[in-house]
Length: 106
Picture 1 (tube, rainbow, N blue to C red):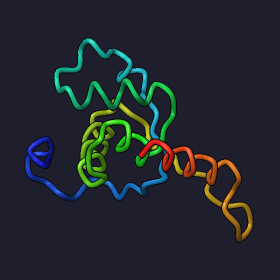
Picture 2 (picture 1 turned 90 degrees about the horizontal axis):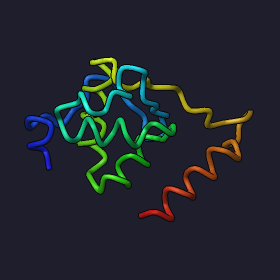
Picture 3 (picture 1 turned 90 degrees about the vertical axis):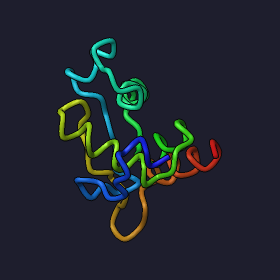
Picture 4 (picture 1 turned 135 degrees about the horizontal axis):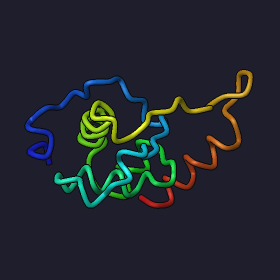
């Protein structure tokens, strides 16, 4: 699967698996995207999703998806948002629901 990343195993950006990804205005022009993986990720992230969710939907290793998201974030096709993962010293309910939802899809 690493042929999709040109053999690279490390992303340009340090992306946490719970980081939220959404498609930018530029990335919404799906018919203009020539790389199939870029088109797939931008299409999935029309609804905000975590890096882990994108990997699960695409059935690709997390490392590959992190590299691809780093690439397309650099091109301005997606936006990377910090995840609201904790309230005080405990994980937020929203975060736990997203984790559970992602695990159910695997």
